[in-house]
Length: 121
Image (cartoon, rainbow, N blue to C red):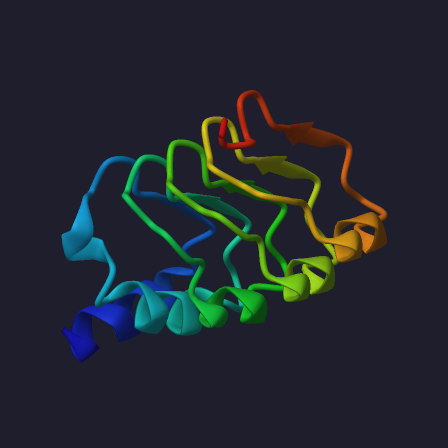
């Protein structure tokens, strides 16, 4: 697996589209994010039953588009505000209880998709 990850780095992967991969993605996702963090620009993790965002994602400072839609996320971590290149954040259909104040630090953010983000009580 490590050899495959090293090859991905050499390829300079900029787009990682992993919608609907399911729970098998969860154990490998942190390592994958660390390896791809220097070049990753677009990340689609939609509909993967993620209840949290791996902390390794904060290393992806070149990230411009992040799709987390359809995951049962209750919280976005405050460090999301450190993803300074983020232009689009998609959290449609998540179960967010709030959006952290740090999102206001994303000065490049021009699109925030949040249809049905708050869980009905």
